[in-house]
Amino acid sequence: MRLRRSLNLVLAVAIVAGAGAAWYAGQRDSGPPSLTALAPGDIRTLALTFPRDERKSLRLERRRDGWHIAEPIERAASDGRVVTALAVLAAPARGCYAVDEHELADFGLDDPRLRMEADDTTVEFGDRAADGRRYVRAGNRFCLLPDQFWPLMKLGLEGFAAPGVLGAGSAPRRISTPKAEARLTGDDAWDLTRGSGDAKAWAARWRAARADGFVLDPPDADLGRIRIATDSAITEFRITVREPALVLVATGADYGLEIAAEEAERLLAPPPDAPDAGSS
Image 1 (cartoon, rainbow, N blue to C red):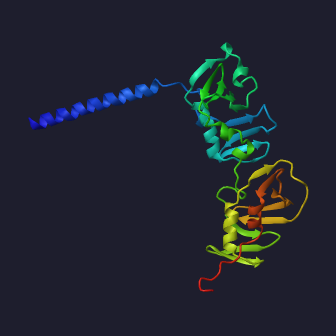
Image 2: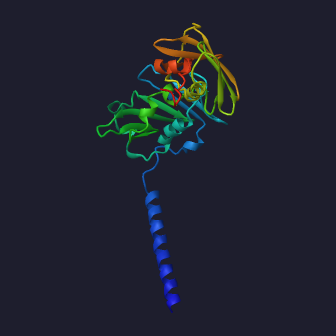
Image 3: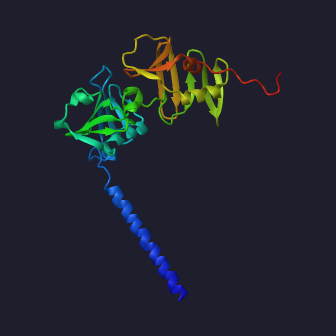
């Protein structure tokens, strides 16, 4: 009898739990629809234009090795940031209104701040509402969405281009600048062949180097050359500007990488050797 009562109790708990799960699933299914019917993971192309200002338009493509910027420059994109931007397509659409029943100018949608084209679907970003949400149009309706997507979108090229100077996962094996030269000689051992300082720390700085911006029409000047060899490639940069920021143009590229002056000095020459622990 005790066994039967125990089994009945387990069965009752299972029934209640199953009913609760079904109710919860029903609540989720009955939630607001997504802004679009697209699945962000299925998108192959993405274009961003900024009708209200002179910011450069972007065109991105998803390739076998991830997302790439195809215009206005050819460069790897930050996959994580593209995925974040595409999440707007599946955002829960609350507070939606029919386009033909309202004046779009009242919501900043007659001349949107941003036009996003994901494959063949267009999404437009208008003004912010008084509660901090943003008016976003998709098809024949516009909705109020949390303003979590615009801060990234408005950055344009600087927001989506991969910032790493050497590319994702690349580590230098040889470094040559107008001020110094160093090479990897063994397991994590570096040797300076020209100049002075801590070669290993210098290599770590180059491995982590990031561009602060991108110069679409860099000067033709040649103020020196930088050559970096990694496991997979040798990249040569032409120094086109030194002040107020360093601008590097890779061989074959039609744009420059802008690096802040403080960081530039850290890349052009090795840092001083650390003093010996026993020195006074």
